[in-house]
Image 1 (cartoon, rainbow, N blue to C red):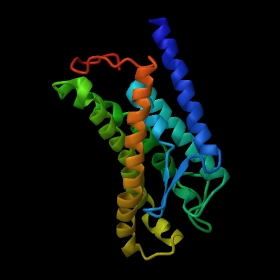
Image 2: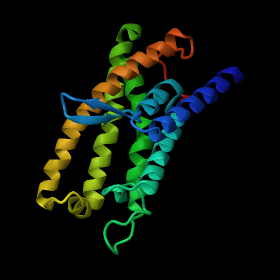
Image 3: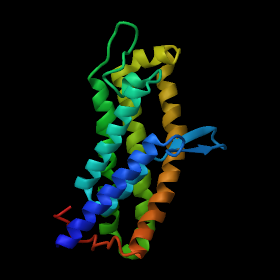
Length: 224
């Protein structure tokens, strides 16, 4: 039991370190998608994988670490929309920052560490052949975790900072909803595809290396 707990702590430390590397090493946390003309972030992927392998409690912790790196990056190197992720960045001249930025910064990222686990276990519990359905479960879980981040972040920005975000982007507020939907559709799709592939590949690698032993998903995992 102690060895299993130690392994979880070591894996949590490894995923945490990877999150910080992706966040603070230039260009590492982004993948160019020429066919979509966008850059897709990969910083949420360790959180998704950690959620599935370690469970929702550790996953939520990893998600909070992702949120912390976002807060630090947007505070130390602010861009035109960094006020959405840091209360220390002004929304406009003389407007100051907003504590609502902490909700945008942390809540979606914490949920990245929770949603994939429950999506994965739900599919596996209902599968007649869990081993054969594992790849499908991992792909769907990766998509769910990625879209959780994209949809919640962009929705919260629209709700909390709609007018300020539109001003920062130099667009009419009436066009903001369409812009938000395009980000979810285009960026969200690219990131979800990458998350789906990498989640399945990495989790299977963990299984093959003996670093993750899937339990019987047909039973209730009360210790998760």
